[in-house]
Length: 104
Image (cartoon, rainbow, N blue to C red; front, side):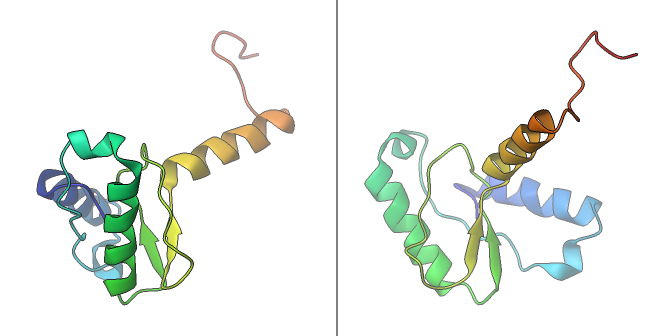
């Protein structure tokens, strides 16, 4: 799921480059503008509409800089940026993160 067609095309290209092309349908487009990013309710309504219409177990949020809520029904909505930040936090807490200039 992505905000617009250019973002969706790039996501599809990246999925294919990772060998994931056969595992996903074409990226769904929310049809939202840059101005809509600041409208939490409009964004959430669009996401809910898209997620409930998609027949999949998991939907990747291709515009993860925006807070999303799927409403609890339908596929699981995955936010890659939030997930990456959580993983970095876990790695840092476990001492597995190496900061720039501190390699030994």
